[in-house]
Length: 222
Image (cartoon, rainbow, N blue to C red; front, side, top):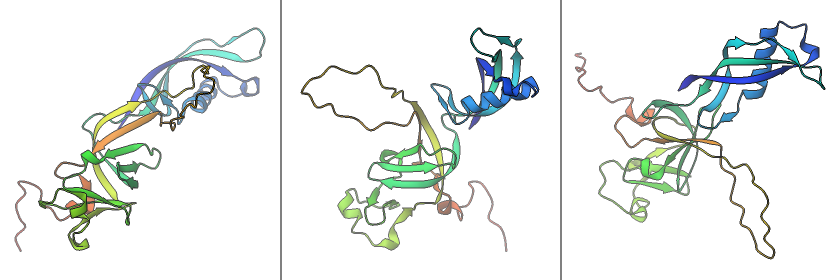
């Protein structure tokens, strides 16, 4: 889920911090710049792990800052493909389920990665699974008794497998010269999204599998 990435950068230290040990001041500035920021094709930055190389501080003409060329290792959140993680259900809609880890909310389970047959209940705002049911249409499944449905409720702890991750760069480009034409503004996407699945044995709300016997494990004798 977490990994280390090597980053090179030039870090400025304000004169007010010259009394602080250089390494401490540099780490503080790196964390200020990178913490909770998404780096494209790297992941969500968490904090500095350590400093690998620190050059000599130099003053540039025009300011009083000391500039350090630094190579450092950064703790990054980027789960690998097929990794199994635990998260909480944040919300649900017809397209799928959104999950949260507390510090990261852009984890999604598309409807195709939910166990089938499944349907979205608009009254409960939640998806439910009908195990071993022959039903195929949403209308039929919404007519089933509530007691037969296995809901995936908001706030429930859920075990998921990572299928992929996607990075988006939605920085605005130069304005387009379009007179008399209405330009449709698409909603801004999150810079980093993790796509997950629960369409396998053992995945889904942990409550589903609490009573399940581990394969190959002998039954306890009374």
